[in-house]
Length: 279
Image (cartoon, rainbow, N blue to C red; front, side, top):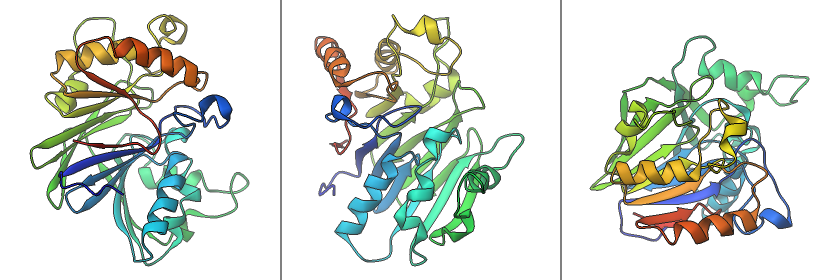
């Protein structure tokens, strides 16, 4: 799927926020909710379990029938980031080893949140039947975990009910994954975001809105592509990947954004499902 000698590759399987939006108006960039596959050395790290995780699972099963080991990081448990998990075919295969890691927060535990979304009458299959899931672990802000040659560091972002961002370092390459996040009113960059994204090779940033749309959604926990660009420039990010698009944003809107960022200094990409980036 990656075929590269780089220690870090990134494949987008879901680039939308809030709800999937299939159809002809979103076919080119994709309509699934968040899921990103990262190959870090010999490790498979998956970021978020939106509906895009189904496409990732199909691709994995088509490429091998051997048992799969992967670590799945959840930013938070808002539905668009976990709604693909009950339909993730690799999670039902007991031969697989899927370890889920997510934010440590006050209140409901991570395992409780995942189990509750699969309780009747809302869903007929219990979480316990995901026999490929071997562990559910919580990670706190500022903590790091090691996976082979990769180190993953977590920090809280600015989002209702707290969203966790992650930084993956492997060899001399790095990725910051910062969905969902709302920028502040001041010019000062959020401390968690700055800690994750400073000097990274790629920053995946919440671009739900444009600056023009943002006032109608202030306080909803999301940012704009313009704020993403300013943040990436200030933090010396090599490549900015805009993602987490609002459901109302269609392909022609993203074409217009691409035309604008292509005129700006620095590397900016519009996250596109099925697209792999070698860092």
